[in-house]
Length: 158
Image 1: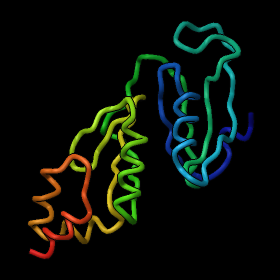
Image 2 (image 1 turned 120 degrees about the vertical axis):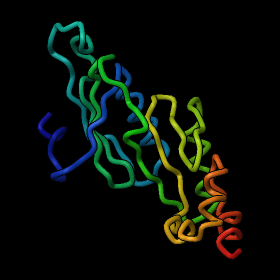
Image 3 (image 1 turned 90 degrees about the vertical axis):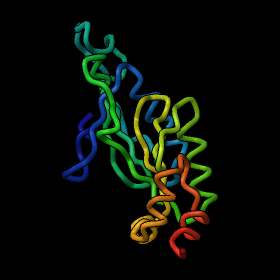
Image 4 (image 1 turned 180 degrees about the vertical axis):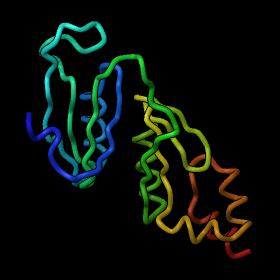
């Protein structure tokens, strides 16, 4: 149990409504160098928390980034106000992460996708800052849902 809250000084902490462990396993299955770190089971009789013996808090790493998730109940919802950014070197990587994260979720716009648990992700080219510093590439990105590196690069050359 003590390993749940050990590690880096600052880490993301996500609030789920009963499916934190399922979400963590889903994410760990998508990203390389990822693993489950531990879980703390509920030991309280509280209608807002999971039943005794079910996961209350889970800790995991996504490609080395430590994340903690809690089954805190329906009071708080995930929103696009918080998102993870996935920096990709190739279109193949963008396509792969987009498909996996979007499975059962919702494609949004400009490289944003919301997964089936309600967590938002930005799946972007690693050089997005350089690309969108060109006004035509920024305009092209604004018209895209999933980002297309070749189209952004072509727009940046215009």
